[in-house]
Length: 452
Image 1 (cartoon, one colour):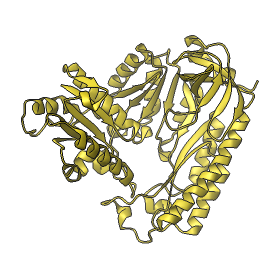
Image 2 (cartoon, one colour):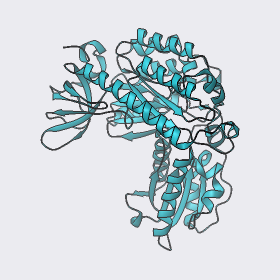
Image 3 (cartoon, one colour):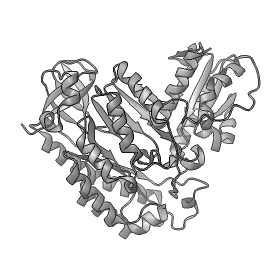
């Protein structure tokens, strides 16, 4: 069959979609780039928060309206389990594929092709999701675990994806070798909590051990980036590992969610704000040139002016280089949905705007400090009039800023760029000579990312 695949949601969903596509190709099916060419339309949905569900429903409804009589429409992923009844209400949806059953996509598709009514599928695979990686140009996401065993009061992920399940290390090493063999320069580790890797198997410091094994398996890898770390799970060994390996980007994504103890307690998050400050100080002291990303939620039930003021002060004092701010989304069935003291939407939006304006100024100051430096850039695009577009080791794909530089380079190259100007989110500069694979993998932070 010819399959048109739509992916919605986070990088972990992209990995699942890449895995489903690979399984379908191996079974002789074809992935096509337009709905009109397809026999089957497959939507990998996101059910994390209400806006994501609305986007998923809109995509399904659009394809349902346009599909031909003989075409089939399958809703897969996060919404297919917990919100299955909602998806079945969309006219034209022929089958659902639960997130735990994504590895059975070929069985489902072939049953539909034979005109059968889909019955029960095989039990879920012990390996998370349908696959382990998704490639974007010279970068790839590597999903090291699926599910979540935390108990954040606002989050539906444990109900959607089940408990935390670490992928086997051997499978991850094999996947990394295959990625580098096909030209990937950057591997981005993702999971609901990367720092919990191995905890479900009783391992301690599983993430540092995994990273060290990955670096040994693929010594030519240019960058390895760690996303979605939980503050309570960041250990001294992890800090030493990031600082001690030049391939590991001096970049950590630590979603803190808030900075007032009372709010954090209502969220079911670690509520010791001073402990968080100590961690941030230890990270900055232990990792040269570190850039920190975090996320905050505003408008959480019961968030008072005093609590919001504490968050604003925390943001200003800690001066995170990268920040995302989201308004609270009430999710049915979560403990947070039963909390009193809802915050009006207009207040939550105003608080978000206030924090983002403050963060823009913080980010602009950081960017201006980079002017005059020469930084290593992974080229992701080539524009008109001799402009190349890429990212530094301080910028994660799809969420952080870009570098736009005058000069010539090929997509996938690592090139030195002298920074000449900066804004709140992006840097501008001029390209120097391309950096070889050996330089990229073996030169320390100080020589390629240094004050000139």
